[in-house]
Length: 348
Ligand code: SAH
Image (cartoon, rainbow, N blue to C red; front, side):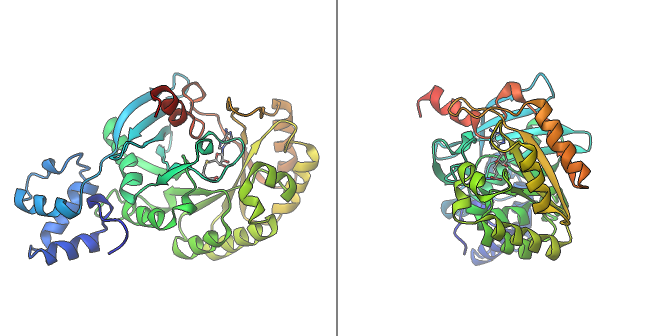
């Protein structure tokens, strides 16, 4: 038995073992798993063809934890929706739905809060409350699919939290999301973003070679990177780039580097040049994100001229680069802003 015992965190094999140990027929496990992960019930009462006595016995050791929508904000600019969910213990987390031409993409949180301390990020200001269970990561996707009535086709683990700081739950969540008896999402449609926990990059490449990896780079040298991302004090750039290279070679997939542009900090032509040198020859894509300023810090967005010059320079060097569209600016869609403002409003 793994560390998660709540009903919706159990994978198909575990659920089957439990059902058999209870002296029940194996097909019951299939029924229950389908209710939980395909029909997406919000309460065990909805499993109408499962005997009540069996459910009651099962729930005794394996409680059903749902995520409950408490707020929804819809952007008037681009249709982005931001959801605030409460968990069974009162924690709150946020998730974002981004409707694209190619399908609905959901950005989920992997932790309630975060302990990584990245300077411009609102998610980390209140520290880490706790890791999310696999069921709570899945629950965000399920709740959004139910709320909109539309299939979720892409999942990005780029919300609050550092996914590689909750590694086993993350891998379990991915396996369950891609399970044929669940939502059956393609691994290729999942992206996980890390601030750069090097040993986990190797492990992830070995265990999830089809999943897209994004690394928060944000600076082309250790000095500036350490200022923005405390994790860089532990894992310097040369180690990080070696791990990125391992991912690319091992998986044959293109890696994404996220680079949030902060005015006067990491957006100079010299830094663009250094960045180009750093990634030259690697199968990668650079995603430039004009920093989304948060009230608590005085980081400012790069001027649009610096953004285009930065981008242009990388393009000239033959590097694939895009500037991320700013989605849902009017609804506090930057990492962790909504959760934090909710906690302030509610005094929790
Ligand atoms: N912990 C993961 C995922 C978190 S957020 C990681 O660090 O990758 C996803 C991306 O948004 C990261 O690159 C993060 O550094 C960036 N980010 C967070 N807050 C931001 C802000 N206010 N403006 C711009 N980018 C931000």
